[in-house]
Length: 365
Image 1 (cartoon, rainbow, N blue to C red):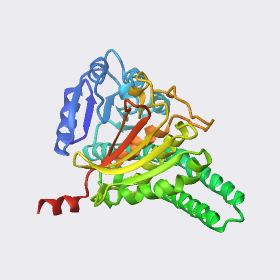
Image 2 (image 1 turned 180 degrees about the horizontal axis):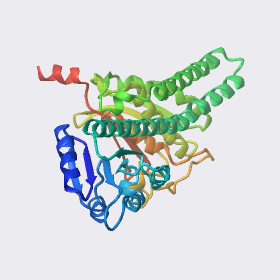
Image 3 (image 1 turned 180 degrees about the vertical axis):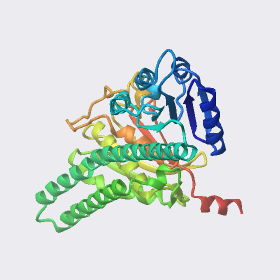
């Protein structure tokens, strides 16, 4: 789609020249003959750039520019003055009003087109930079939240290894859990540094073994379950086809769900991790025997609407960001998440991905 330029000028000859030049260059155009008309046209929809005459009846260019910059919809739209004024004071006044550049009258076609192209290119770069910074900020929040879990698991496994220092098998088991947590930290850091641009652009990843990832998450969280005297089990469907997704992001989703389940399940309870086929998708479920969630809180799941009323059962930290991150990580790889609350109590959180493309092709043969 071509970029849109608003031309504001009360002189028909100037308008004609600019319309011909910019139309021939492929831009879409809006035209206003005075400042009031320009403000009315841009009240709802902002052009990508505004060419604004200085000397106009009614609102002059300076006042029109100030009002354009005061409108939220055009606050960031670059404004170029078209002026015959050459005094330094006038130029300073123009920049103070919010102008980014000016074109001197009489207007030269090539100069006007060059300045327009330059400022539109700068606008595109600013937008791209803003998107990239927002993406980095989002993944920084993810990393900050998700690094806490494996670090806590390392501390727990270290404590259990010290308690069992005379039991080589127990120490070896805890060292394995520490290794799993360190590997997860590395994956989170790699995710953050890489920013997963391909995933953000809508790529679907590749085939992954959701059962293998779930087993790794269970092994990693066994020390935390043991410390809280919670039974942590794994149930994997046989011959489960691979899912289409990103292994790093999928692991983080399952790890977040298991970590949450352990936090909200009381001592002596049970957390079960399952992998299965569900409605044509590949699913990982995390079911607990905790208190569940009141019906009034359920619409707030996976949103930023505030903390839920349920609290961890042993004083663990909970900042209310985990499920928001789970949803975003799942959707970044084409998956989905949800929660059910069985009539018998507890909670069941699930994460689904579509089957791997290669598996779908094989099935159709």
